[in-house]
Image (cartoon, rainbow, N blue to C red):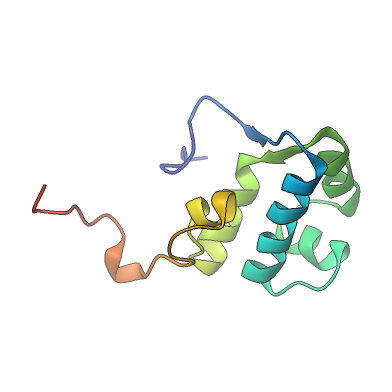
Length: 101
């Protein structure tokens, strides 16, 4: 699989420090995917509900989940990570470089 350009390539997951942070991530994943349950979200993320529960218990989010949501919905991985910035990245902006820099 191609490395994500939004998250560090050497990491395969994002670790959160608190349960509340994980819940914020989870809410943003639900918003981005329009899923209503763990089972719907698991299906969307091409995983199982038990792996989502395990991620919650361990306070980690696999990088592949960010990649899948981006690929299927154009949701900005940085927005998923922080809740800040543009929620989506429009296809016409993929790969564009700011020429004024």
